[in-house]
Length: 388
Ligand SMILES: *Cc1c(COP(=O)(O)O)cnc(C)c1O
Image 1: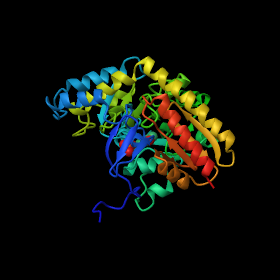
Image 2 (image 1 turned 45 degrees about the vertical axis):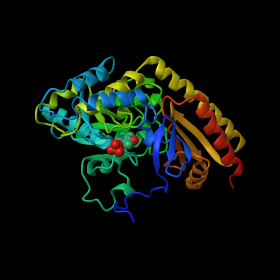
Image 3 (image 1 turned 90 degrees about the vertical axis):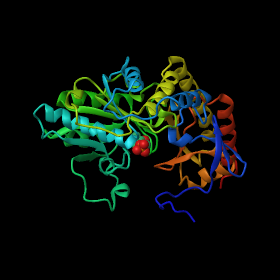
Image 4 (image 1 turned 60 degrees about the vertical axis):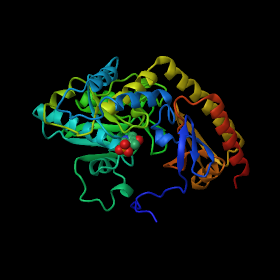
């Protein structure tokens, strides 16, 4: 019997090791892992270059308090802000913490500007910003908030794509609009470029802040370092997490110079956030992922993968409704519930994960090879062929 609480519905499978795109189960089977810890292992499992960074740093110093200067963190913050919209960074350990800090930064900014009444955040209904008390109320999802009352005030919601109701929600109490550039858990729904530009424009007109949650789609996952780069806009605050640690728990909030004025000594802290071990690994991941050539390769592989998936869709239009995504954040939407399909893929040794709206989410490591993509295509084809 398991002494872990029952808050997960776990698949009955465990792994003893991984290498690159593959996981090896306890009973000796090899799986092509296109979950990668949910877009976390940017460079695949047990990457030797990351292993080296980890073991080197582990022999020097793991953890010191943030009340001291941490050079590895200074270095990573410098890299994250170089040539980006951001001027300052706060490190955390996870995505939910990063989105929470994004909210704190937005509110504190207006408080500092003598506008403490400007504290409401507008979010997309049923989006995903993590599982802390504030983050679940930011998502406004009934399923996630049920039983966890009282409701945390300060969040307003509009339906994805409903521009009219979004505009109506903006009042003098609004501090920010916070959306995922690509809705990951929500079914790989991309906010179109023109919409992102529209959001930036509204925020400028109303003098409110734009927070883009790139916890899932950021750090190269989209084929650009940030997914919003495709729209050519500059947000004010961006939480990132999943991909930046390459499997090591690490999150961060990036902010522009203007909004950072509120974050004075004592306004925020984290015991673990930004410790030397995490920072060393973050630096190593970033050195690979931020390279133009690396990102171009993500885009190339993405185009190939999506093209091949669309061929399958064409052959099985009754099973597959839509293929969508950006970079290596790919969704295959089925006409019906995807549970059985994901199970069949797993039986054929391909691991994928669900997202909302009957989507099978496909998240290879960013350094996946073409032959591994071909292997997955073969498996998906087979499952479609045998699917009833
Ligand atoms: C995963 C995710 C989070 C939460 O990250 P955790 O590390 O699980 O707390 C927040 N926002 C988005 C968009 C995510 O995909």
